[in-house]
Image (cartoon, rainbow, N blue to C red; front, top):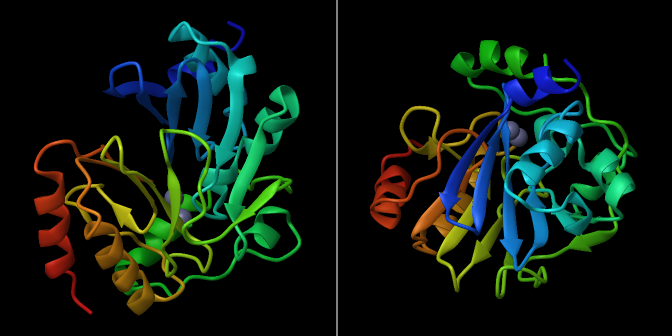
Length: 240
Ligand SMILES: [Zn+2]
Ligand SMILES: [Zn+2]
């Protein structure tokens, strides 16, 4: 028994061999990046997922003690979830944009999105995920900040889903993490539940212009084929 039920509630998907894996939860997902055994998480799943994440790390022959940082793409519970517990266990630093940091710390409420009609039931479903605990943020990020992993990973401020939403770009590897600005649940599209749809569309355009070879979304499968073209087409087809 033990932690088996948690493990089964999470899929581990290889995106780039020996570099990048996706950890998929019932709602939401996180990504594990490795640099010679030094580990970075991009997002942290839901509140109950710390054991499952560490189990996934071990199953890859890696050591959870090597978790150095957790980069949060934004303040929502399905992304912040296990960050506090993992950081406390492993001494990892938590990094997030300055504008979402007060929400992640629990000092401010999660901003309410402006929902489109069809988003309303989806949003209610998302709220079935446990609320994230107040989570210390060790470093507040700004657009363009270097993140210290992935041979030059840096922050791309992508506001609109939340004010402090970020993308993470690894130009040397052609990898882009979009957070929830972009989703691939079905076709690649603008993410849902935005506080400011017009700004989210502008952010989507900015992320697509980076023309990554691999795009990793907050929800849905990573894109590894014709990625730049698919993103450009999705931006062009996004209604204002
Ligand atoms: Zn979100
Ligand atoms: Zn999300």
